[in-house]
Every structure is written in structure tokens, then in C-alpha cells.
Image (tube, rainbow over all chains, first blue to last red; front, side, top):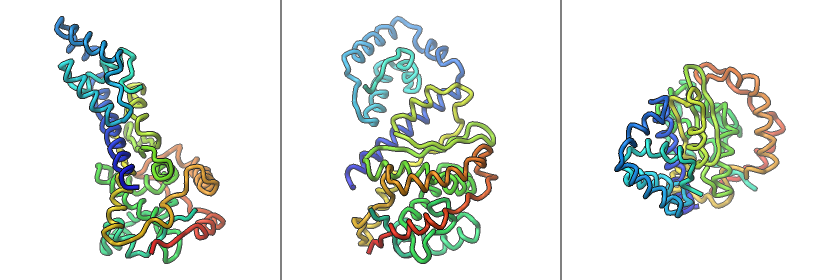
Length: 100
Length: 215
């Protein structure tokens, strides 16, 4: 059971962290969209967002592992220049799945 | 299919709980075991899942849940964490056992695939988003138990900690417990809940028959 348990541990840990980040984010601000708009109201953001959307469409952020999902959110947040929890809601607003 | 059992000394080795702590927990009423019990169901033999219950309680308490709440949650929601355990152990699936505090006196407990939890929180109405989430990483607990077993020279290959998730006996035990718990669950508050009833004599016998020593 050794190795599979390590993978399962990492997956559970990543999902728990992600869920906690989402819960914290949602508790902090009622209208998430307002927060997203604050970060995204710039032409520079539009260019970055277009690049990320193209990559999402090309399936570049489509790891099947949950740990991959968290890493992908980190990468997307980095590319957009957003905090990771805002990036999560930005992606959610697109109705695009990071994990297939 | 055998459920692993061990002596008190072996369970202490597997959980890292010393004798004084265990005695203190019994005196303070914070002891837990599987099947919603305060002490192991089988006389003189501990199931490994009893040890796992202790580690789940400690995990919840370390995450910031009041100890009494952690004790009652572990006991009152054993079918939920056992189901998660069974999926991890027998199906190799990443399942979480999660306890959430929505507001004062309002809690919920859930188990399910880990990947579903972030999506569930994201889809919730804002007023239902929990203010505290306590996630129990069951694979991590199993991994720690396995490491301790290797250190202590204990062989865990003779059986398993839990029965498979679709095993008839496990389903019956959970059904019986949930039926008894249903009325109390409406008013569930881990800080003020009554103790759950123990399993019936018939199931106690079935557990005895399935128990297998780890030596």
C-alpha cells in the first residue's frame, strides 16, 4: 500500500487546501465578481487572459491528478498576475474546467 | 475478509499514543473507538480501526476543533469516515472525511472523493459556505500507521483495517447505526450530543468472527 498511499495523501491534501482557499475566499467577499473586476479592469489583463483562455482551450492545464489541479491554478494565477483564490473564481466565471 | 486486530501494546505502537495519555483520555471521557464506541468493541482485543478512530479524533482536535467536539464527531460519524477509509484502502481512491461548521451550533459531516470537495464549496450558496472546514486526510493516517508498523516489526498483510465499501456486513452495520442516529442528527451539535448507541449483539458477533490478529 506504500506508494499509492503517498499519492492519495497528496491528492487529499491538495483538495483540502483548495477547498479551504475557496471557502475562505467566498466568506471574505460576497460578490466575487466585484473582486475579480477590481483585478481584471485593465487592458494588460485582457491580453494575459486571452493567452490563458487559449491555453485552457488547448488543454494545457488539464492534469488529471488533483495535485496537478492545484499546481495549475498556481500557474494560471501567475500568468494572470492574480492571487490564486481570485484566479480560481475567474476560471469558474468562464465555466471552463481546469481538470477534464 | 479479515479485519486486523492487535493487543493494546500493538495498537499503542501503531498510533503513537502512550499508556498515560490513553488512561487520561478514558478518565476525561475523550476516549474513542470504532463503531461509535468509547472503548473497543471486542474484549481484550483492539481492532486497528479502533486505533484509526483515535487518530481521526486527534487530527480533528489538532485542526482546531474543541476536543469534546472531535470525540463526538469521531463516534457519531463513524460510518462516514469508515466509508472514506474503505474507499482509500480497498479501491485506492482519494476520499476525504470532512467536518464543517456553518454557524454556531450548525455543523455537517461528509465523505466523498477529494476532488469533489472544492467544487462542492464553490457551488454552495454563500450563506451555506462553512466558516470552518476540518478535513481528515485518511490516506495520511494509514500511511503513518503503516510506517509505525514497519518500525515496530508488525505485519499488517494478514487482513485489512476496514471491510470493502460494498461488503454486506459493513453496509448492514452502517445502516443500523445511521437508523439509530437519524433522530439525533437533526439536532446534531458535537458539543452537546448524546452518546450514540452501541452496535447490536448480532453485529458484535460478526465483528468477532471477522477479526484477525496482526502478529
